[in-house]
Image (tube, rainbow, N blue to C red; front, side):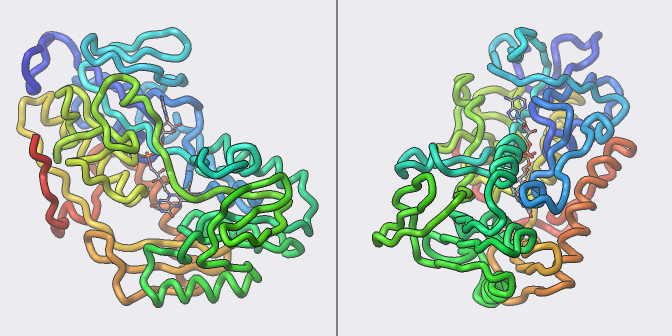
Length: 398
Ligand SMILES: Cc1cc2nc3c(=O)[nH]c(=O)nc-3n(C[C@H](O)[C@H](O)[C@H](O)COP(=O)(O)OP(=O)(O)OC[C@H]3O[C@@H](n4cnc5c(N)ncnc54)[C@H](O)[C@@H]3O)c2cc1C
């Protein structure tokens, strides 16, 4: 194989391996079924699909966050339950934790993002609980079960995950006081009016919001703030910041500073024309989209489209994606929807209250249904931006 269009083995079937069975990987794998000459495999560490958007529900005991992954994948998609340890790009092989090797003609890199705790804050790694991955959320849930129901809980991070986690815990543990340490501003990506809506809803749940407080140290039962104040915390939840798996970087592929795979606007790796990225782990033109299902699904559709084009000898087209807003659940009964411009800037308008909670729940359900539908009817998924135009992006000068 010397170019990026036609596979060497024209007489043989084309093997596409998808790394990660999250929102992006599952959708991309299902979409690849449009070409019946492709053998599709998804490699995922567990047999479940994780609805990460519901991990705060799992933690608080108000909902589940897993769905059988094989049931979401189309009939022609093979699921391999394992973890990729290395992508050996020159040999076109993925080495797995089990010791097995999986060869590919094309690879879709969709390993998502991770919950992280900074090593720079003393005690944070030892004493706080991240929430961004299934196993982290399960560990946190078990720790909460051991914590008295009236004990004070501290949530670090005033972003969307922190807001949702604080609200869910406050609602499900009404005897406990929940303190939210925002590190600057509550909901920094929200507009003024949507932020005020979230604040009202959190206050209704008696969440104690500290906007400009920053955590300097986490101890077993206390959080010390940068201004010297100490906040009692029987349990501390760390929600500030996402990381990404280091698989691309450790496999010698070029990434951005966080570790997302660097690609062109067709989502093809800058290092290897057989590797295409999607979801939170992709950095198209070094300008990654907001880590979200809202971006992961269109990125997945584009990644699958790129592979389908390359397999058929067609020129892939560039990513077209547009944001519509941010849906925030504030407990089970309330929510806020911040409407946004195509490039994710907050508009003046928002929807608040019970209607927003209903819409958010519908969106969460619809996303999973869309993946399953793509399994039954490959090519059916449509997304904002594809039809109505997406924001202008600056392609990377390679
Ligand atoms: C609490 C919480 C609430 C959220 N709420 C929202 C929301 O309301 N709206 C929204 O749009 N987004 C929300 N998000 C963000 C959203 O969940 C992510 O952006 C989305 O999951 C990204 O999809 P993905 O497919 O790229 O990655 P993921 O869903 O993370 O899937 C990646 C998959 O790859 C697997 N994987 C990782 N490493 C390997 C490996 N080496 N080998 C094989 N497989 C591997 C992972 O285990 C995982 O199954 C939320 C996130 C959290 C944590």
